[in-house]
Image (cartoon, rainbow, N blue to C red; front, side):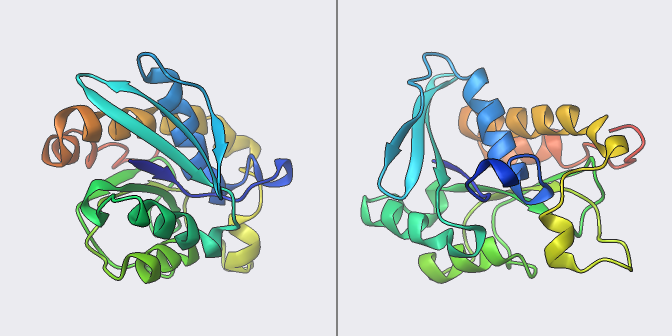
Length: 192
């Protein structure tokens, strides 16, 4: 189960906080026999094949700080926290970097905090997409809800495509292999 975090609504579609939605949308385009998106409760879902493995995708349709509501519904269906890959933006990583991790704290990310609260654990895999730190003159809340700048938009498609492939590799090849392949991606943000 690959769960992309973001905010619903067209006004948020191209913002930094929606990097998780962007990556899951790009992943859907990579899957074989993708079912298409359907609204199911508090989320939009789809499914397809990543290699030999089934990938189920979800995009919670509550606002970011309530993402845990969708995760709680998934856990009630029988998914375990270890079977979820949470895909989210990260202001602590430079734009153009990715990190796949088996667990970890929320790092001040409201969506991840909501997921931790719903899951009752920090032991769930996550894919963090670097969106860069907020400038000193910006409030973090406004920064993540702003669209990428023109300069950033030049590299965002490559980063989103890489994040989608990293998520695909988690499903198809396993977490360890995906970490080995993708945790060095974009170490030099200029290359990203």
